[in-house]
Image 1 (cartoon, protein in one colour):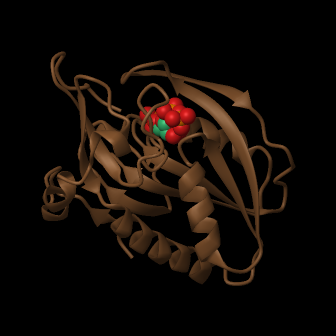
Image 2 (cartoon, rainbow, N blue to C red):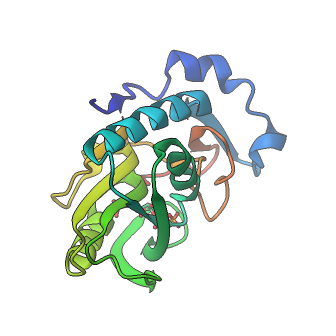
Length: 211
Ligand code: PRP
C-alpha cells in the first residue's frame, strides 16, 4: 500500500481539531504554538496498515525491530503491538541535529546495539526521514553486520528535503516541509509527548527553517 500523502499542512481534520490543542496539554512556551497535522487516530490507523504490510512480507519470521532513539520510541512500541508473531527489540542512538531546528548533517553513533543482528530479519524503525543522511549512515552500519533481511519503516517522510539517495521500504505519511513535533518528535527535547503529529510555529522570530 502506498504511503498516505498529507497534501497541505491545513487538512480538514487538523483544522477541526486545532482548537482542542490547549496550552496545558501541549506544554507550550510563550511565542510557540502547535497545529495538528496528523491526528493520533489517523496515525494509529495507518500504523495497523503498516504492521499488516510488514507481516505480509515476513509472515513467520521473528522481526527484530531496531528503534533509532529517541524519536521512534512511541512508533516502535505501538507498531510492535500491532505486528503479532515473534518480535524482539533493540535500540541505538545517533545524533544528526544540534539544538534547535537545523540539521548539521553530521551523524555520530552515541549508543550501539546491545545484540548482534547477524542472520536476523531487521526492521529499522524511524520516526522521520528528512535529508536521509542518518538513514544512509545507518544502512551502511547495519549492512556490515550481515542481517538476513534489512528493511526500513518510517512514520513520516519529508520527500522534498532529501539529500541522500535513500528511501524507506514502508512509509506512513509523506508530509510537507514543516517543522513537526509530537508522537516522539521534539523541539529541544520538548513536545515528544504530544499524541498527535503537529506543526510547531513561532510567533515572533519567524518560522523554523526545517526539521
Ligand atoms: C531525527 C530522526 C532521524 C533523523 C532524520 O532524529 O529521528 O533519526 O532526525 O533526519 P535526516 O533524514 O535529516 O538525517 P534527531 O537527530 O532529531 O534525534 P531524536 O530522534 O532524538 O529527536
